Amino acid sequence: MPNPNPHNSISNETSSLRFKCCLIAYSFLMRVLAPVLRIKAAKRGKKEPGYLYAVDERFAKYGDATKESVRRFKPGAIWIHAVSLGETNAALVLVKALLGYQQERGNELESIRFVFTHSTATGRQAGCELINTLGLDESNAAQVWYPWDTPGGVQRFLDHFRPRIGLLMETEVWPNMVLRAKRAGVPLILVNARMNEKSFKSARYVGLFAKTVYQNLSAVLAQTPADALRLKALGAPVVGTLGNLKFDASVSTDQITNGARFVEYFYKKYKKRIALFASSRQGEEALLLHALIANRTLSEGVQWLIVPRHPQRFAEVIGLAVQLGFAVSKRTSLSAAADQSVINGDENTEYFEQDIPNPSKLPEIWIGNTVGEMHFYYSISSVALLGGSFEPLGGQNLIEAAACGCPVVMGPHVFNFTHAAEQACRRGAALQAQSLQEACARAHHITLDEQTQSQMSGKALAFAGENKGAVAKTVQALRGYL
Image (cartoon, rainbow, N blue to C red; front, side, top):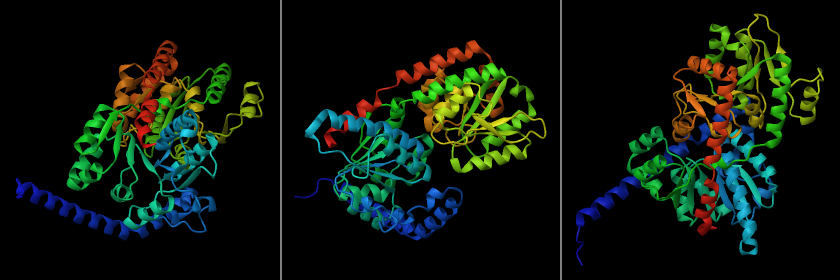
């Protein structure tokens, strides 16, 4: 029987051929760039040794540098890809819920096992902490680098682990990843999915190639209606708009309690409140320090604390502050017992220990040079500047600050968390400034105005509480695949 619409058939064949040509070119480029990945890992490893660990895993080669438990890991696990710290924090919420779901179902489900993949050293470290926090072990949790996106590398990864399902956290979609998983019969679901305007325009620019990749995902669970619309425009099979998993993250009650005690001790002793620059990125610390030099009143009654986003930059930020003439104190105590000794009046122990004296009489700067204590840092702070929002980097996660009752002052660049940022501002949990200098002034006012600070703190907690529930919806959406 003749084709009733031969033009469509020809068009489809042409589109398919174009896509195949693009995929061949892309895969060739990824193969050519593979040696560059080794060089990049070696360079980054000088500052962050985690990048030097098991580099062959990035090419799905599981030899002597890989744990034997990983080499012999039983097939059929749930594969979770969480590229870095933020995605791994969201994965923690989801994995905890999946374990709870398994427990509820009892013997109806085989014991759930997980394969975690990451692309950054920070993400891998957070993944290790996730495994320990949830009491997983080598029998039910494996952790490796996600392989470089070549056809051979992805295929070796899939052949080795043979996962029953893949959950990609938030944004991480790679062409060979998607296509090889579909060929292997592994459902691949983009979970807690977000797509900002900048990424959307980039994907649209690639056109048919990007659209075909997104079409081959098994399902997409979007965070917000705007994310869902952009992803649908790319052909992604969006099956729900479920909210942000990060609202369901637990807050460390120990860190919050410890922080509250410290605030009482610190104010009683020094009559100062604390303002935090949370998850600051390169270039932003210099803006803050120069603002404090230009306007000394910003330090009146306020102790400024900087917590850089990336641990490998701790020494760099300390060096910058010293170079500009600030006295610097670093966070040194991770021990609750040691922290309690400060509260009890032991002058021989400090939460922040001075590393560099104050030669120029500039105000002292605290550097939070520890990992895993953000809830403590938020709990001791009256207000937080949002890192990544004062340079065109898209902003960091403000949900964590809100959950700790810490008001936020953000800059103009929040395209990674547009919906949450707009909601927080509407609810009175956050303010937006157009420059870091303006943000410093507003943060200084909030810090010293007890009534404003208290009101914003309460609204931050309410904002965080109102948006919980995404994890239950996500588990419900995944039940058919489990």
